[in-house]
Image 1 (cartoon, helix red, strand yellow):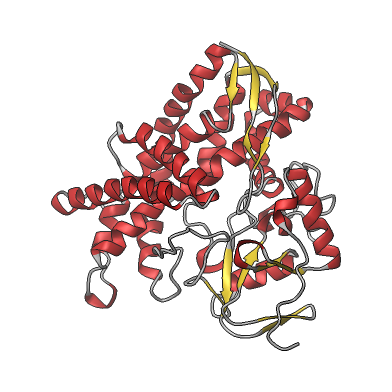
Image 2 (image 1 turned 90 degrees about the horizontal axis):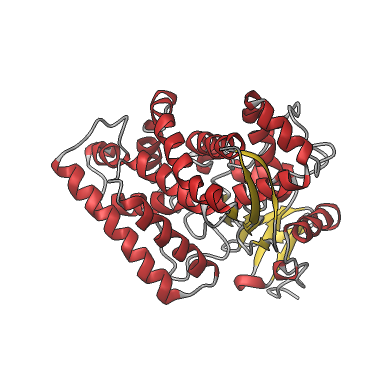
Length: 397
């Protein structure tokens, strides 16, 4: 009947572990590649690589200015650049990209290595701990602190505040989301105030770079700059704990690979790419249909949210043979979608790659062996992977 919603094809809540989630998406890829769920207010899920890649690259049909993730922030706020469509998002993206060039990242790497060693030390001394919620949550705060040129005392505050915000956001706890978000807005406003008073070179400082933008000859709105920096404070804090937790759980099961990577650090860059493909932490990044879209016999209506299930696309066997297996130097690994594609591909991907390589390298160098030592907690929508991974660690120090 016209106007009636289709019968739901799946419920993401029925899959409580990463393995169950991947099994669900494998079924959908084969049986129902454009799937409907009634969860979180109702949304569509694209699960095949070709469809996800095409939608991510078509920012006219699949827009970002309505919903960028499912479930979304319970307050419905929109911040640039993630929640803006072109051309409005372009100056924000240009300003951030300017600060993520290879020369600057090379200069940041020694400081990040020092931070990684310091944050890992307590786990080494205790002989273990939750690698995702401790090391995996604290080290990324230093990555963000160094990139934004924040004062060192901000890093531990950011780590705790962002972790609390993420937990509340997943639970749709509006009060805690508001409280923690305002703390991060405070950090962003202080940063803008300081850079107006004492700007830094635009290639080395995101706040200064945003303040220097002049689209159409006019500066960006200050509150939108604050919003972009507030978004920057948290985007780099969501995925790293899950990625590192999932990688460590994988290496616990594959001790031969763990030993091989420890013995030959030159393998780490290629290993990181395959880990990114295999353990992509997102299943809920979303767009909204701008007009009717007919795909695989289903019709997506204007205004309906569509999740681009990158985690499913990266295990599509039609693109990545033997997709559930780790394959070092996979011939087409550059095709993975862990960072998205198109205008809204992750701006921080070069920094994220380096940070993950540094974090994993420090862990391997500082240990002789590690293995899971307790129950693993799986992520809920919009992520997929391991949010809590207790490890027993044998230190090399």
